Image 1 (tube, rainbow, N blue to C red):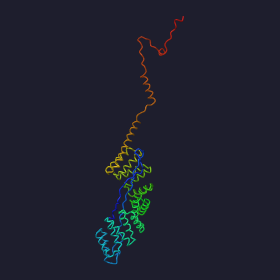
Image 2: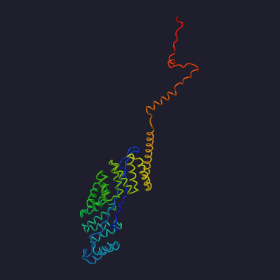
Image 3: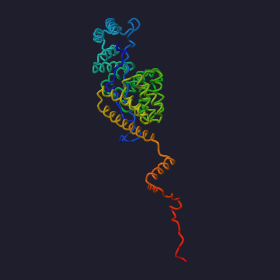
Length: 385
């Protein structure tokens, strides 16, 4: 059933921006990457309209033939028989063109068939006939948003909320289109209204966190990400984004813990591996950083992301060089340095090796004392007398 599905936004991709500018790879700290956009998934249209009750409960026309065709349309609509429902509503409108609810139902059928132009036309006609149809304003906003007509979508969602201020889906989708328009503060307000009305709406919490992060409200963003993880403890993207915020806040231990959870929940999360490597590198954990970068490089390569693959390979080379430098320093530190005593002993040995050797005495000669070596004997002067 369509009401069980969510319409994916046309630019639901995950892009990346550098959160900390690094002009060269020689700086001691490297910047992590952050998710720039996320989970822009539209809430489903309202398909259970007030006129979907039985004919006896909700008379739609005094003309029995018109009412009969209308009721056939409702019955077939509830059975997801779109073609049969369209035919029945068209027959009812041929007899009574001002049936606003028949127009609203036709708009829903065309929206579900992705026939956006005729859906917008039927919604507009339904609203002209009955300006109090809050569900129809909401569905009109949905169709316009999918057409890329963002200003019209904003107007339609806001009018839906004037009629029904508790329509969570309208706040949520309004937040999406405001975010796309770059109106971040207004998007934050819309997401906040959505989560206030429905605290379990995970996507609203997640998109609220991203908008808060992009407006520099880091602490509030952290709270919002933690709320996402409270509702969905296996949300790898939320762990990864939370890790980036922690790293930017100078809380590396918490960042590492968050990134570790991210890759545990999603072993193919290249961005989380990359940022884990960056944070470990900045902490001096070079071998662990190298392992994380290796996994990031493998995942980026499998994704076909050549730019990030090359960038990660450069980091791997840098880390490998740092590891070799550390090993060299450790080897040099382990070599014992000569002490004062060993130096003296060495000098004494060198002196002994370079000193002239004594000549052996003649056989039968009387040994000469040290004093005689240094001072020759003085003989008496025999010519004095």
